[in-house]
Image (cartoon, rainbow, N blue to C red):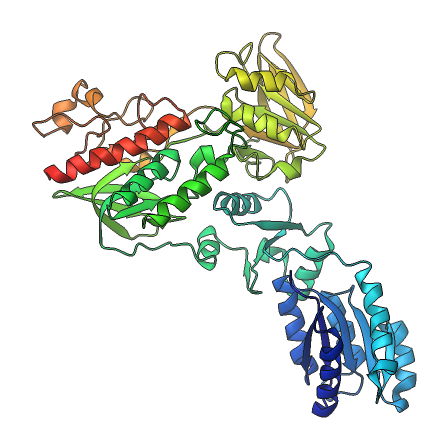
Length: 553
C-alpha cells in the first residue's frame, strides 16, 4: 500500500531543508515526505498526485512566499484533497494572518518559526493533526479509475473492455461520489471530457476510444511479423485452444480479437459443467488461464483489433484489419463465434449500453443493486446471468416466449433458479418496449397468450437470445448456411456449389472451409455443439489439421 504524503512548501531553501529533515526523521516510516520551494510547482504536483490515486495527509505551507501566499496555496490545494490537514508556517509578525486563515481555509494549526526543539514544538502538534486525519482515512483505490456518468454507453463499453482483458478498475460516479467530483474539478474537466480514464501513473485520457485505452495499457495493437504459420481470428474458447496448441507445437501463431479473450463464454459468471472444475469457474477465469498459457508458448496476441476481410493470394491468406493494415499467413483458423441477436423492439437501440445490455452481466451487476432486472432468453448463458445478478438485484425476471426452460437450459441451472427466491420466470411473454430518457426506467411486457400489456419499472435488461455468427467480414468466398454459419468438411462436398468453390482433388479436412487452408472452429461453424468443451476440442483439432495442410502445401 502506498504511504500517505506530507507535502511542505517554503520558498526559503534553508527553512525547507530544516522542516523536511525533521519530518523525515520522525515520520518517514509511515509517510512519504515531499518538499518544494515553489507553491505553483506544489499545486501541479497536487493534481498529479490526485490523478495517480495518491493521498495527501498534511499540507505544511509557509505564509510569505513570492509567487503565492500560503493561505492561497492551501485554498487551492484543498480542491484536490479537501480532507488533508493544513498547517501554516509563520513568523511572529504573521500571527494575525494565521488566525484569520483559520476561518478562510479551516486551518488546523499554525506553527511559529523557529520550532526548535521539534520534540516539543513540532512533533506533538503534527502527531495530533495526523491522528485526527487517520481516524477518517480509508486507503484509496490505486488502479485504473473511470470517472463519468452511470448508464453511459461509452462507460459500459470501456468497463466491458477492461473486465474482458482482466484489468481491475474502479468506476467513480460524477453525480454523487466525492472523489469523482474532486478529479473533475482539479483537472478542469467538462462534460465533453467524460468519461475520463485515470491511470496509475497519473495520466488521463479524456473521452477516449477503446484503442487509445488499449495502447496506454500496453496491449499489442500492431502485428510484429510479416508472415505467420497460422492466424487465429477470435479469442473465444475455440480460438484460445487453437492458440495454445499452435504455440506449443512451434507454429508462428497470431491470435486476433476485436475485444477481449473469452468471447461470450468470457462473460459467463459461472460455468459449472466444464470438465475438471467440480466447483465451476467463471468465464473470465477460464479466459485468463488460457491467454496466459498461450502467451507462455510464445503466441502473439493482437487486441483490440477487428478484422474486416480476408483475401487469398497464391497460397497465402491476407487478413485485412480494421485499422487499415494487413497481416499475411500460410493458414487461418476462424473462431469468431456468435453474437447475441439484437432486439429491434421500440427503445432497445436508443438505450443500448444505458440499461439495455447484450450479455455483460458481470460488468453491470453493481448498477443493478436493489433494482428490478429483466433477462431475455432461456439458454445457459441467461441462467448463469440470472444466478449472478440475483446477488445484487432486488428481483430478477426471466422473460421467455415458451412455457418453460426445460428445452433450452441445463437441469442443474433450472434447479438453482427454482431455489432462488428473488428469481421469477415469466413465460409466454416478451418485452415489446424499453422506456427511459437517458437510461432505462420501464419495460412494457406483452403476454402472448392473453394479449395483455403491462408496464413495469426496470433497472436493466440483459439479452441472451439468438446466435448470429460473426462471419460478415468473410465475404463471398466461403460457403455458408442460410444463417451465415460456415460450412466445413463433408458439408462442403455435399453442397450444390461445391465444384464452384472447392478446386482441389482431395476433399476438405474435417474443419476446413470452402477456402483451402482456412479452418473454422467453435460456434461459428455449422453443426457446432455450442458448448465450451466442444469449442476447445475443435480449436485443438484445427491445429492438427493446420499441420497436415502445411505439410502438404
